Amino acid sequence: MVWDLRMQSCVRAMLQHGRQVVDLRVDWPTFQGMSCSADRSIILWDLEVAEPLQRFDKHPGSVWCLDVDWAGRRMVTGAGPGDNSIFVWDFRDGFVERQILGHEGSVWALAVDWEVAHKAFETAQGVGLQTEAGIEPPDSNVPSKEEMQSGGESPDGKSHKGKRRKKWVKRRVKTTE
Image (cartoon, rainbow, N blue to C red; front, side):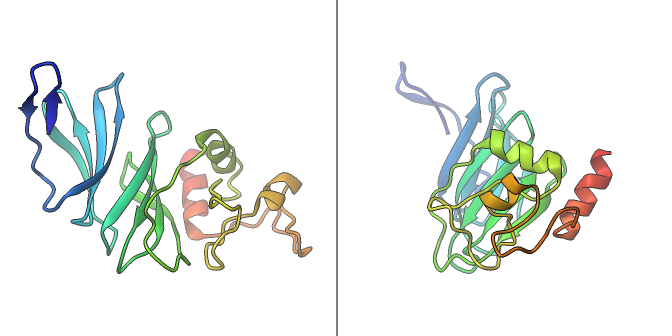
């Protein structure tokens, strides 16, 4: 729902989610919004006309949080029971670029430093996401901060330079060349 706080009234009802909306991000210059819900969906909205522009339904569990890079057209979502993962999306085409697994419970909140993430995307070394303590879940396959700074060598001495980590990186590199 879009509220006019001065008039204390609802001016637009947006009822496309089947359950409660738990997080929302807005890009005020374009008047677009992104919402996530316990119904397992994320919706990109045109707030001017209160209509959905795109719907994303790939999480098997409730989606509890999101962060959006409006300029780069990427988003990151965190999910709850049945999923407990983080998805990195290119929301131009709805493509899930990466699923980060290994969380023992629901992902209730997240924040992305998009400047760091852009550098990681540009170098095709992976996604520049770090969990709050700087420790990645064992199955995440995200390069550590040390790997990214050293140009591809991990602390255990294994070289990752020039190796593409996952199919999504190969596809993303091909489509951006």
